[in-house]
Image (cartoon, rainbow, N blue to C red; front, side):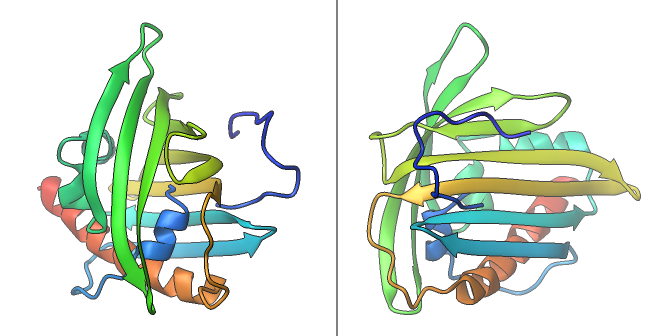
Length: 195
């Protein structure tokens, strides 16, 4: 279950997650062996709901290690230009800053995201956006990492509200198409790490 939200507008919905940043994910690279099982993007009331499932030929622990290596993360996710750990808390959480840069259609933007990373059960990762510390008003994401069929099923769920204008031409269909391409490239890189 996602973390409870207390200050978000009641109608603000979205689905990483990572994300008005997903409005920035234009990637035209070769496809990987990674299997993108599903991608859903819903734009509603100024916010987004995002989910996807990716089947990878890699060990779940290696996938988790790749997703939590914040120094190396920009090499894994092409539109991610900068990633740094800002703080470690005594309860095990971390605060990180991520800067995404890219274009979809003719809309180009750099989006800064500051979030608190929490470790959930097993290899799951839960994050909560820090309001007023980046370009998102509110948000959360959850990565679920499960062993499946000799590899890993990576499931992602997120909701967020951007703190900037997103042109109406960036439809859910266009974002879904760009995200699918980005996921295939990211999956290929994760599988290469797992070998």
